[in-house]
Length: 214
Image: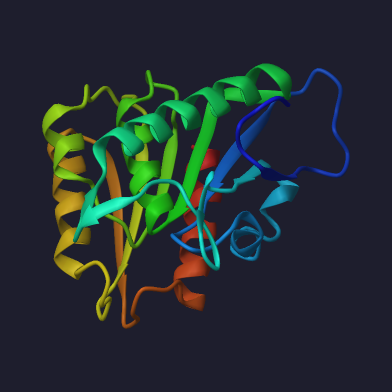
């Protein structure tokens, strides 16, 4: 698949001809990479086509999807460009792989969660579910983006109660914003920092499989 992104693909072992499969697009946090996220989705490739996407900007020791100008403030131009590139990536994957357009999911941690929620809110009704682990919605997304989530959109949001990077209140604000739109939201908090605990890991796996079955 021709794309500006490096990505890692995981998929069911036995692909049936003419069958369409749900897809999960995975995005990492700042300074990480696509390989580090695969441990979070291990086993889900039995059900999903999984695309773990590397950020296109160097951010030692890894990569990033966008730059920031301050606390909770992405550079708008870079952020907008990345959202455009990621939505194009998803569109291309839908064309080139046997993906079920009604079962497209996004999963992200930190920067990846920020982008996952943003794309879920704006991407032409194409996203069925978003798993947002320790992220926030930038003010300009809420105030200036064209918000048009699918009526079937469901969101799993989790946040560490001890998160020193993004305060817990930011996670709660995400929940309230989605609820105001009438979106089905599951919100979980954990006695953790800016990380994904084993309990959080189990919870979002269960949520994904339950939501897909609905």
